[in-house]
Length: 310
Ligand code: NAP
Image 1 (tube, rainbow, N blue to C red):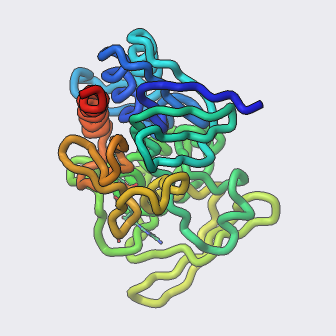
Image 2: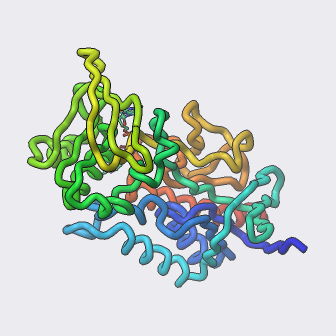
Image 3: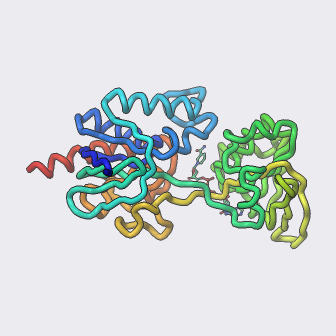
């Protein structure tokens, strides 16, 4: 028989936003479950060092701060559960969360499922994924010691990860589709003139090729029309993010890009359904803003549950 467990608050996703929301909700004595399909930390856990999270003047390891945030939420009584959320039913006063481990009911649900990497969408990307095609430099960078690798993208992620990869790779080719980077100036400064990095401006990848693992990239210069081959052992793709909204699509208001729309209290258009972190429609996606969203969502959950008693 399917197990049904009742909580006051169900937090979906244990990145910095979800863990902070769970901390605040549990600390307010709400019976809180924190659901995560992989491991605590989300994208934060796969980040080598966070340089702009206040309180750590020399930076802090993504994995270290992830574990610390989880420990802190659990210390106040949040229950951490590893489970895949298959379906959410957000209508009505009591919401239902169907997971791989059973059903959870709660009057308040906090959506904190974050984002995932956008795929490049070129031939060879899917077939060579895990065999030279990667979306996580911290996870896979050490495999490329002494080799040449490519990084695709011009945002903060691509630049930060390209610099990280210079620890291992003999050379990093940064493939940028325009003639400028999208990354913020302080991040750009780390890569412009880096001795181990060659930036290929106006360049897109048309194909990733290799027999059993990545061997070469087919490149196109969008300005000159010139085509070329670049021999690399690996390609790291950082071309933006997509919101993880599949389990509740059609149930809450989303913006044109699929991010959840909420007010300043993190309330969505559905009573009792809150959002926090990168999943929320907003301008600045950072650990610091995720934590801020999570704190507000945790307090709003408390106010919402109080309002149900009146
Ligand atoms: P992003 O800011 O959306 O940048 C995506 C990059 O990929 C852009 O340079 C874009 O080019 C390029 N791109 C998109 N589609 C492409 C394609 N098909 N082929 C080649 N290039 C393509 O994504 P992100 O870097 O993952 O960052 C996501 C968010 O996290 C941002 O808000 C960022 O500020 C934040 N973040 C912050 C830090 C930090 O503060 N240190 C670190 C990591 C991430 P165009 O510029 O031409 O559109």
